[in-house]
Image (cartoon, rainbow, N blue to C red; front, side, top):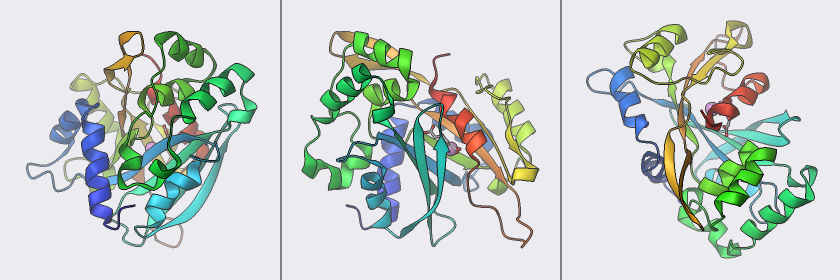
Length: 267
Ligand code: OOG
Ligand code: NI
């Protein structure tokens, strides 16, 4: 595991950029000339609740570089469970890790996931690069579509595996923008498609967090029977509000997160 938090995030970022070309344009559009105001509020990773690669296994990499567990979230309809982690340095991105509760899915999905996971070497899970190691398996386009019919999340995992599925611009830190509506308008004017599930803006000042996101880029995946383009990763935008004690809210909002997951749905 990494001992340097910056090295971990640099690697996650480069790996994310390799399948998310739109991310560079997002920085150009929202950042000031120096881009030093583009600070990431958080990133997110996905996994299955399988004993070898459950969310705690991913979290261990962040605990090793100074993160602490802070909140948990349930997504019953999507059969997901998540936790979030924070670093003692508030300028380090928060981390949101979710897992698919595989035993609640169909026997067919469970069998496919077990086959995928069986390819992961137990030792690989603690190696430095695990969180940006992508897939450890190769499924067919037919299997991808079968998973997609039951769980968009499972299909995404089959194509992309271990990597940050999004980075998140902190609107609080931007010099050129101070509200989420103008950020969304600038993105749309530049040709980005936004996630409209539950409305373009998820959350409100009342829940202390407003969020929006692009729809994931389409990117070619090498499936076992040939190439096919499928949604890869996306960019999110978050504006946080102060709690009554005057400190910024640092948690997540389950009802909003439920919609953000849909940023990797097909366009
Ligand atoms: C995570 C979705 C939730 C948020 O900020 O609420 C989320 C995911 O898509 O894996 O990122
Ligand atoms: Ni997010």
